[in-house]
Length: 165
Image (cartoon, rainbow, N blue to C red; front, side, top):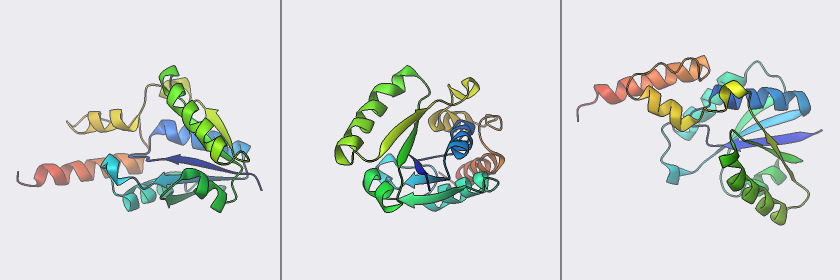
């Protein structure tokens, strides 16, 4: 079975991420969307919330699953018997950092390949950070994220504004 891991913080999952997931699902027998536990990034959504949102967004894809991991990605890929890692590239500016990661992962385990995929051109500008920046002041992000993510953003932001300062 050809298994690929698509790692990220997915805070939150965007339509660009979903596009990469859907295209990877056509190329591999199993795609594991691996949500990184990295508290140093101070995520907007908890790990459990991100896992649930990804699971909701991929439920129609029979060969895609969601999981969480902590520690070195390459160890997680090995544990899952993965052959490759998918990394999304939106722009040339992403390439240098992603290239360094790919080379380091190859140094750690040369059996595991890194594959770069670009989202559709309509999503090249999109990032989780931009989605949060639009959503915080009440902007409409429904064109940028799956419906469950849009609803979760609205709920979480409503709770934050309802709390006294």
